[in-house]
Length: 109
Ligand code: HEC
Ligand code: HEC
Ligand code: HEC
Image (cartoon, rainbow, N blue to C red; front, side):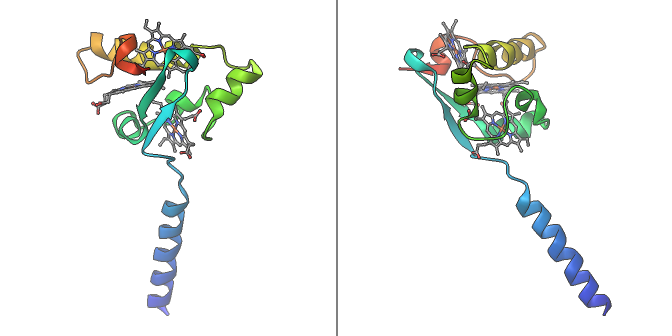
């Protein structure tokens, strides 16, 4: 009986881990004529821990940035300026691990 309860607990724990959807490991974010932007998603999750540092602006859904930009809810360059570049600059200034801050390091034509 005790064994059965243990097994059931493990099964439920395993299930809830499996249900966390962390999305794709690597992504490409479209940005019109400017050229696509490569984005290492899981590397950011590990470095930053907090999903809401990004997902307060757009939901955890593939293509959501593009959708919201088309609807006009998100301005062009809003994610870039308010998140990507802003955070990379702040981290760089703080002398911490950071990401690219120049156009061509992100936008690949
Ligand atoms: C540094 C920014 C950033 C952080 C932090 C972040 N994400 Fe994302 N996430 C993105 C971007 C960018 C997209 C792509 C949106 C798009 O396609 O328009 C995305 C998309 C997703 C998607 C949908 C895409 C897919 O492949 O299914 C899921 C699910 C997701 N994120 C989960 C998470 C979870 C869970 C966390 C926290 C553990 C997290 N994200 C943290 C930037 C981030
Ligand atoms: C850290 C990566 C990064 C850097 C550095 C960066 N961008 Fe971006 N840029 C993005 C991402 C991601 C998007 C798409 C999301 C958005 O529109 O905010 C984007 C979107 C854009 C758009 C809007 C395209 C469209 O059609 O909606 C323009 C224009 C742009 N960037 C120009 C620039 C210029 C010019 C520079 C250099 C001064 C630059 N970017 C630097 C990541 C970056
Ligand atoms: C809240 C802070 C934060 C935000 C928002 C953020 N980044 Fe980063 N980024 C980092 C940090 C920290 C690193 C260094 C991670 C490491 O070295 O493990 C990084 C590294 C990178 C790298 C280099 C990866 C490598 O090692 O080759 C790229 C490319 C990048 N970011 C793109 C983006 C883009 C595009 C966005 C916006 C969609 C974005 N980042 C949003 C903090 C952020």
